[in-house]
Length: 216
Length: 402
Image 1 (cartoon, helix red, strand yellow):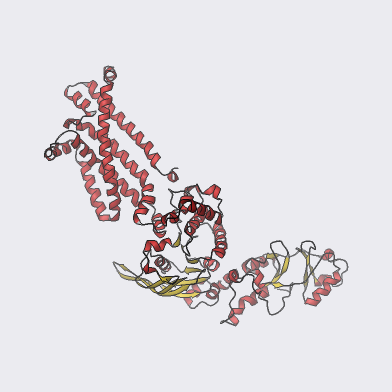
Image 2 (cartoon, helix red, strand yellow; image 1 turned 180 degrees about the vertical axis):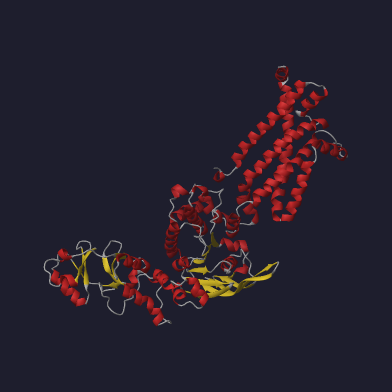
């Protein structure tokens, strides 16, 4: 009951933090799409390179976020950005690479060889084949990767509050240090809710981006 | 015209070099369908793919309409050749219309013109443009998809078509229909076509010429009837099958083996006239025709009416069978076996009596090439339709005991 009244009284603060939280994830995942999709496409050309890239991306995934933030402080301090927004965005960007690269790679690799053969035989150049055939067919799987990245990183961003990046993690960290259950629960609830809403929103976007001919 | 000169393909593999195609030379004349036939791994598909440079040859030359294909950029070359594959390969993200418009768009055809062409082509492959243009490939059956595949290959009106087992994945009933429609289309379009198949029946049906491959070598290149009647070696003989002479039946139209101008009577005629006419022609039976539309309605046997009186109609018996003049001999022979008879009345599309065909005439026609192996080859019916009708040297005797 206390928690509910806390949420009601502080709804404007919570919404503000949620927007801040989401903007970190959105910017970082946006950048991750811009880097991860081309990387995923590029590595389809060479099996060995693909294995290496996916291995490295998977390794990044295993670094605990708190450790990653700690690692970045001395490095980014050199440009005066040791804590705050920039390291948070970089961490999310790194964590997003694996699902996005892997899904792009798998999707492009799984395009029916017959379609590639038909496209080549009809006289499409490699880039035309990519734009007109392979990418449109890969969109649903790439978007699934983006959704995974967003959901994971809404969680990661909550921890970025410890390096002063703001967001809903602020409520959680403050709740812990002040032993204030109301803030802690409100923050945790808001993070979960945000993840669910973001996932549904992206699902809708995924359906919109999927070519009509592929929709069942 | 497609000309291959000493075309060779050697693939490098970890276990050494493999010669997939070995000094193959032949020529596909303008407007003809050449079937590349052989067991899997014989080099037929590799040979075909070297023509549109999906596979680069190791040696030799290929000319299309006299021009060396090596002088072109491979992509430009491919846009001048229609390409149809067994897996069809329609792009699932595009509508039927967009699929057909792929090559016209690649070569910069104005959109409106390409759209018009797409509708026209769809009509040509027997799909209603009003229904199918805006559909997606997944909404079509396999047969419909391959029709679209053929339409797409024809979109930029290429002089040359490359087809890789185009009807291989379609069920037998639809395959026959699509093959027939394709041949009808080809009769107007006269494209130069290289067509890969592993099915001898398809090859005999579709091909103007057949190239038989084994282990990268061209074993025989001839008209279908020559391949069937005179296989050059034991491999070809075995490949075309022990029933190869029966397969030749497919190549001849009933009209070409039919005895025209056979005698007939009308039901109102006196039976004596029928007897007189049978004696005159030396036949043991005679066909009774309906006077209004000239359709055969029955049969009179000499043995049963020699002493009889009355009209022909009263003595007419059931006609054992009839066959369309445009049907092939296989159909005729099958009908003879079904009806347990040695001859059939031949009718046109309106059911009008045109003549009759006998087992003896068929045997005689097919045997011609063995008696005079250098000249007597059964005519290619698609080409010679409407020309001179081959007549058996002796008059047939309908109703003669088998």
